[in-house]
Amino acid sequence: MPGLSAVVFVPDDTAKTGYSRPMMLQSIMGTPLLSWLASSLSAGGVGRFFLVCHERFLSACRACFPADTELMCARSEDTPDQLHVFLSTADEQEEDIIVVTGPAVITPFASDEEEFDAPPVPSGVTSVSKQALMEALDDRFIFTDFLKDRGVPYTDRDGVYAVSSMQQLAEWKPVLGREVLYRLAQNGVTIWDLDNTYIEPTVVVGAGTEILPGTILRGTTSIADGCRIGPNAYLENVRVGTGSTVNASQAYDAVIGSDTTVGPFAYLRPGTQVGSGCRVGDFVEVKNSVIGDGTKISHLTYVGDSDVGRNVNFGCGTVTVNYDRVTKSRTIIGDDAFIGCNTNLIAPVQVGANAYIAAGSTITSDVPDAALAIARARQSNKKDWSIRHKLKSQE
Image (cartoon, rainbow, N blue to C red):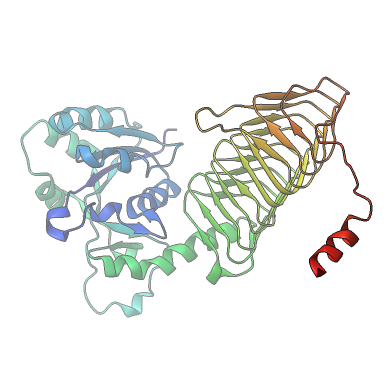
């Protein structure tokens, strides 16, 4: 079953509002209104979308739809023909099509009926007969007039509300944000503080996971079961494996394995893949690197453009020196290597499996498997130097 079908028009109302983007692309907690709307429709069973928008907003609009839905984007000159194809390929048992023609929000937390003293307000979301719409496409017609005559508008009594200003958009922020948290709580997620947790509707969180205060989850972030996220964690487009912890850290476009601990105060930059059973500790930054299972990077370390094996131990103050102002080069570290404190690995360089790097070394050449590399000046002690120095300063 492909799911219900919806036709979504994104009107270019920038001339009327004076904004640089249409109202449907204005954000609630950093997420466009269109994304909230598409997520609500998807949660209600819509699996197919037909999008009509101005070409200059097409890329931003496409990004608002869930990745697991079917999306057809119309070219303005071929919209009727493409819409006909879209409707004709809908499920045979599907009788009605949902049509969105303006900014709106959908929420199950509608007001009680006794609060309505006036007729319900149309929301810009309408249900219309698929057959009638297909027949009308064969003739020249005005779409809004057709919906007015033949469609059944959703109203606030259906949990569908029109949005006509930025002020209204701001007023919906706490309602929509809380709705996402309620939905996660119903699925077994523990949220410590509903007033200090911000999760976008596109985020997936598994049962048994705890979300601590100050946490912000955005984009395509996916948290598996039994994790602990926060306090004060920011994850954007991050996949976290089962049983992992992310404490007071930031991560972007990264992957974190199962039973791994990140933070506090760690920074995972785009392209980072941390394996399972790992430790990425305080003041550690990892960028565009693959970290093998069981590896420990406990504190004060930078790992950039590196391929790190399993069960590697990084001492405090290690730096992979990956950039010479012209080229970014990679560091390769084999399984079970031990990197001593205050080590500089000058890329491109390779450290073999089971190799040891002595603390304080600056490594510029490859280190063979199981070797000990020492790259530091020999220590010399000047006997009684401080006494002579003090006497000289008193003269």
